Length: 127
Length: 127
DNA sequence: ACGTTGTTCTATTAATATTATAACACACTG
DNA sequence: CAGTGTGTTATAATATTAATAGAACAACGT
Image 1 (tube, rainbow over the protein chains, first blue to last red):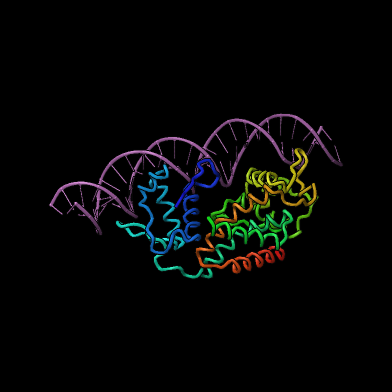
Image 2: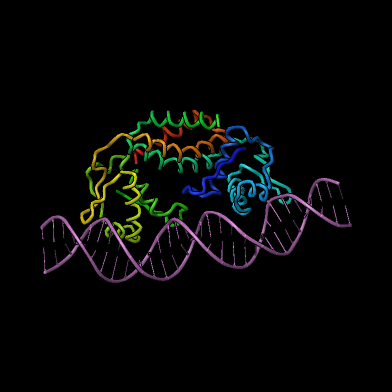
């Protein structure tokens, strides 16, 4: 996994880390059962604090994307890949909604936004 | 325009306000040339501070969605509806990308996410 | 003249983000 | 068994952001 953090981004670095790990999972680079680095070693690698990595991990655990095993380590989606629940889909939709509204104001048609989504999905798959 | 602010949301109220104004534009309820309430009266209506409304307005101005005319008022998209620039599309895509990656990890197919997008666009149009 | 407009300034409070140490309890390994 | 590594917890300090508050300014419209 190659992680690249932009320190001056408006998106917090713990979120950048979590998002890039999610992309790694979406891409298949991080598979169920894989283990993630310890908070300390990962923090050292990335040049950030242990607690920042920890915060990213706990965000991912909230989303059920990883399992944190105390005194042991962190495992990617140990239950295997489960289909999104209704609630998870709804939360996702709520986040996407304002962005689509913005696209609509920018005169993007539904089809254009669909194309954008398809292209993004392909880009994610490629890395 | 009916604005509903959730004070306990994790999304800041200035952002909620800006997003709902954008939805109003996407829906056609706010048309180019329409004027928005003054920061003071709007803040009074919504039960929030003048500076918070001001922050939402300036966010919208950054996005070129409104024009703030000093000592006068605020006008919706005065240049008419212009097509999204390359840069605007790219910024939008960057924001949507991590959400799609999340959907992929949740085992949503490209088609399912496309359907989600289409449904959201329809919901926005209806209000 | 008068009231309204967005702007600017200063200030305070609360919440978040980030880093920093330190210590704890447990697991694994040599 | 001793040592190292694990996530966890606690405390603290700093910086940034979010939100509110009050005051004053300059310009516009009537």
